[in-house]
Image (tube, rainbow, N blue to C red; front, side, top):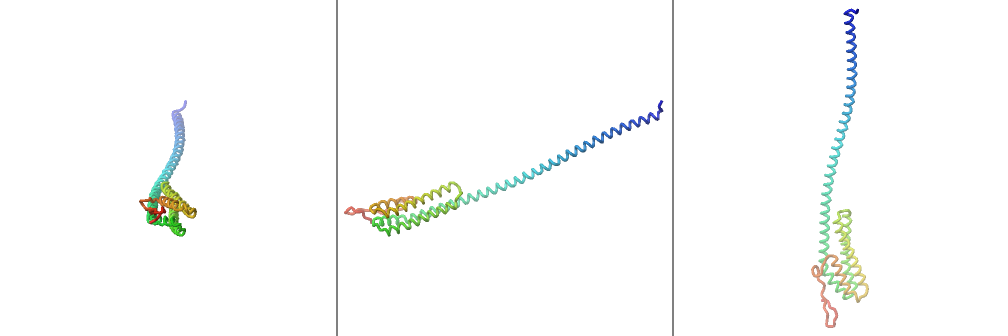
Length: 227
């Protein structure tokens, strides 16, 4: 039989082996847990870094977007002011041209009828020259405004086109009048008077409102007389 001390010793050895085995197992499990925790920490750290970068990018985009919005608002306000100023300038030019035509309309009609009736080519040229100059000046101003306002809003373009068309019609009428004055002398009087009134109407002037046509009378022999 085994002695008591030997049994105790073997028991202690067995218990020690069990404890050592248990501790080794616990240590291995602990190391695995620590390694897994470190991996998860690295992943979490990377996710946090990514989220911070995304937040920074979003903040930068927000600042840029806000800046662009303010810039667009400022540009729009500037464009609206420029449009208003150019429209006002265009209206002033139209008013000025109308006043100039009104000042000369009566004299042009009176001199035109007198020159047409007397068939004096030199006088006709003197009448047509200032009219042509005013038409050229009008057309030049319209073209300049058209150039300055290219690419602007549609309403302004429409106004400019209307002015441009009026200028073209006025130039055409003046040219037709000049050609007719060089043609059949029997048709010059009535045709010239009609076309001159048409030219003044294209400029926005109305007979009886902005000018009066020279009155004509018939003598005892039936001939047309001018006062």
